[in-house]
Length: 104
Image (cartoon, rainbow, N blue to C red; front, side, top):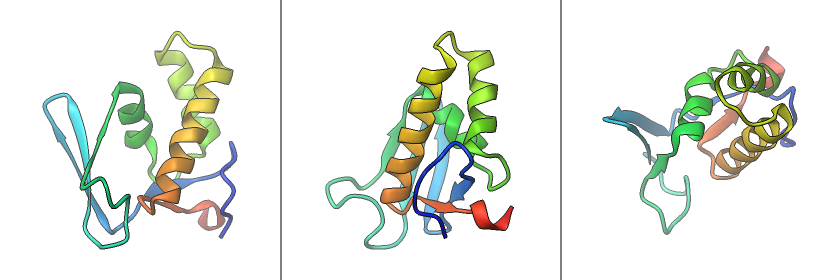
């Protein structure tokens, strides 16, 4: 598996988490010890992170996600790319995402 996050990377949520949308929030709850950060029992996502999360389906590359988001947000594509890669890298480092790049 490729541990470097690039625009061509493909991810999906880990089977060791549960995510739920409640009102306008997306909550991510680790189910297994060692997932996430010891200081955090769950994560809430802001609007941008929620949009990214919904598209992390194990099929779309981060580049494809950036293209979709660049149509929805007024930020530059470069800024959106930086946010998408940063979010994916953070979630991957916390074992909330799994890398599917080799399975595509």
